[in-house]
Length: 66
Length: 255
Image 1 (cartoon, helix red, strand yellow):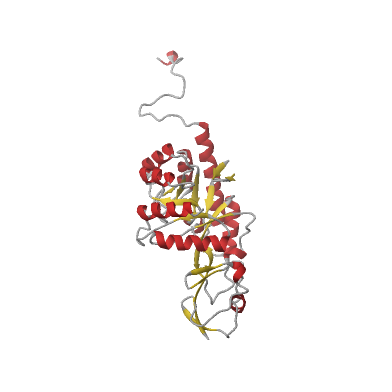
Image 2: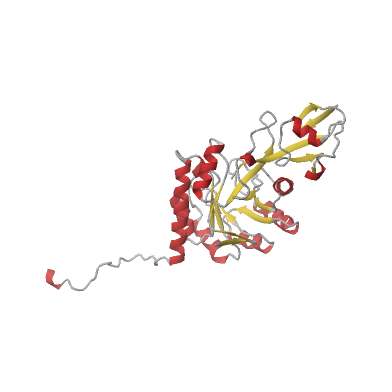
């Protein structure tokens, strides 16, 4: 199924959890915050959150800045 | 010691983490600066570069993180970024930065005041980046800003304190710490801000783009310390009329 991840379409297997997606993308779940359809997903929910087709995810983290 | 909200800081130099040539140089420059509070920004993860994680290079036990809302053009965008920062960083501290005009990157006073009020009510410790406007400074304090951050000059210009007279008024009237932010291009600029009685300064570009960022960070640390000590020591009054440093008596033998 397709989701949108950081503005781009992404193919994920049905039944994939948010935590699994982050692991597939080689991201540290402790330093990434996720917005799903403009709502922030709490970190405790990453493991239990099943992705569904058409969801719009934003993966955000800290970068250098002043 | 500098106190902001319920936190105390020994160092009065806050460090930015942007524009460094490498993570290693950033780490070394921050260590040389002695900074305890450092700013970070929030951006989309670059999915083609998953290992590029600033948090892997910064010790959270050593630094107090001050996420900024850079890139926000209005209060709504800033509030969205603030909530993301709180979620990713487990911190309610925030450098509120709302800059609608990419050419000047000057802060929008109306949106900044609006967002400060909303975010303070929502439990954030808000340090707003603001133009050097003494009335706005009072208004921001009225709605609960934990510190105010007037600019010396526009972000990244290295022009120094072009706003001296107004920053002096802001400091004189302040009920919360004043952190001079933006535009400080040389250690002498930072020292000048501290001599004026600023509680702290925030420096990023001037250190990050220096020929040797690590040594420049040390130079800024020394300047901030010198300026603060000078302020606490009480500077002599300025005068337009000369006054001899050597005794004026005992010169009879010359004439």
